[in-house]
Length: 164
Image (cartoon, rainbow, N blue to C red):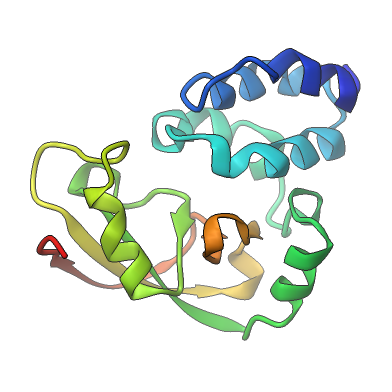
């Protein structure tokens, strides 16, 4: 399947069906084309945590290298300017505290558990971690934030978040 065919295949997916559809078509695509498509659609996927197993079997996890194909030119330039080690935060719930999406902004992280699409039962938490640049798969600059995509951060602390 070509990149253009894949774009057409997912065009009517919503934010909850997009990622599973991308994972379904991954075996039929060149890994580089699939990573580009994933990067183009990453921030439009609202259920990444439910598909961690699929992502671990996808081209995203097939090697330990950064997936530069997922980033556009601006994101690659921003990635190149990152320090060798970065403090990142994840606002979430205990069930999904080791997800893929992190941010260097504590304020942005604290807001996520209170967004309707991410709200869950239980007490929201803020996870603080340290990630080596070499363990960052990609970064995204959409939504006026720096999203760090990684699954190898080193845990520093966890604390409860009170609603802002």
